[in-house]
Image (cartoon, rainbow, N blue to C red):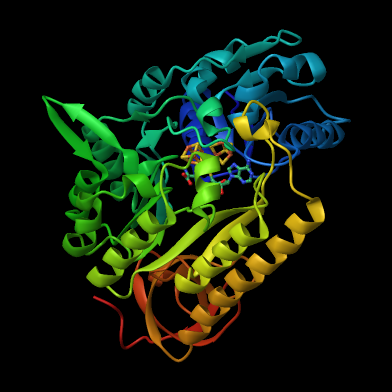
Length: 444
Ligand code: SAM
Ligand code: SF4
Ligand code: F3S
């Protein structure tokens, strides 16, 4: 039987990337193969993100683009998946009849059924929060990801309800997968040749799975993964300061494969704003975590997320954010102007002046980008460990990452892929380190 082609365009966070890969794994069971050409697919999936800005409008714009691509060809089955699908549900097919299927993130286990039963002009919509069935289904389907570095979702959803955030509405309540199912999937990845696993969750460090009156936490997952000799590196993202518990902090002593890099969003350096955001932690809580980890290992570095111009943010609040950035030298970070999201509490609040918010963002980013440049510059002339991921497409150079997840580009040979090599850094810019491999000094 002729294989059908499927193309998925993925927006948003790492979890969407993981989900897209799992959708490919699922549809391969009903004769679909992944295509890299977006203008030649039998099924076209947009895996969407709702976190900021005009997310919904962007999706309709994308569909307009797909329509043009297929103007003279057979229309693909058009699927909108991800967080916009969840938030907008059947409204999407009403507004844009080109869409055939609307599929929310907790209904991905239905993708094969929906595609098999697709009939032209018959619209289907699945946006139930059916997380247990979803993971139960995917537990039966092999994870075929064989890249050097792979994501593995262990926890999904959020019960924290920060006042600005749509995630609790689009991903549903917090759910932690059974530990043995996660380990089984990790073993599949390791067998496929994966060398680095990043444990994923909207609040990954809130992972909590109870069995026979014992609670398993993310520290248990890290500890188990640390024991696989073929696995080189462990990471986790995204964390909440409230869930940085002692057992997780202890992993930085006991698990040598856990990378010394903590992405820990704070959002603001002002306690007043954190309270208005309903963040459930203070700046002081955050600094204590930072100091504890630095004491364990001074090489541990931090990155964070900042929301600038939250409703009510005064000049003083903003100054406090700048002070925090001075105090904690985040080596890279994400920062965005507050974007009112439909259905959230903060969307009803009065916005601060747009120009002031833009000025503040520029200032905060100049500080954050400077830290990043300085950090990279400080590594020039050092020889560092790099996990080699792939060869660059258009150059005879190789791509890998250092322990802080910074991209490194260097000379190399194909057999280095999947290995940790020593690279002497020669130059750098804000995002990337450039160097030469030290062939006589490969890391153990
Ligand atoms: N769970 C993580 C935490 O507690 O920080 C964050 C997950 S969220 C998917 C990623 C980031 O998006 C947040 O840290 C926040 O900085 C940003 N974000 C969420 N809602 C936003 C909004 N309404 N406007 C601007 N940025 C937003
Ligand atoms: Fe959103 Fe993170 Fe807050 Fe949950 S904890 S509501 S995911 S920002
Ligand atoms: Fe976006 Fe949904 Fe992830 S809103 S950031 S794709 S959880």
